[in-house]
Image (cartoon, rainbow, N blue to C red; front, side):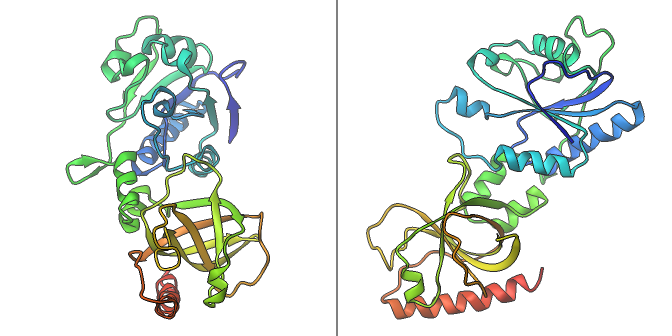
Length: 309
């Protein structure tokens, strides 16, 4: 997949294009992108995904939005789907004032060479979200550009959406989130020095600082995860929360993972954790021995859960 930062001098013609934020690259996004790829093969033109470096909500406010994917994760997921070209645009206040029809004419048609625009289900583009499917179809000056709309992917009566997945993750419902994503949620970050109390309990942990401040952290609890460390995969049990047994009254969340059968110094290195199963809620224990006993039970349950995959 060729990655283009900006839309100038692309030299593309006859493109089949879709546009969106694609946060999470979930089931609904994948169905849309599959439609783009299939149409590009039928029409013998390049498949193109146009997305944004910044989420519009995090530029226009008022509140910052937690994201399912970093830009690097989004690139990797979309590349795996077989897209030929990915165009990453900067979303800023100036860009946000562009009308929907101007964006389609001046960017997609003139710069990206779009012959066919595949519109997402219930998607809107342009200033103040003015451009829905019918608006775009009626834009003047498109000179025969094909505009079609992809069907949504539904769970019950509701279309699968990034917000639905965010809510599931914040509730710690990893099974539901992974099902909607069609892959397992991941989190990456640098290993930072901690208080090393896990080692005292017999369960040394790596403290992870996420690499992107906007990346969504799932709800507090203990999870069975896979860990990619030092270019290898390991089983791990990961705790997200405030460590109420060790540090009562603490309100700052931490992300700590005990990597099974692993004993290397990885401070300063990058780890990626892949969420497989939620084991339990975070809990305050009466003493350190009870905590250690629970961690041993968590270790055994982690092995049992991950042996299924």
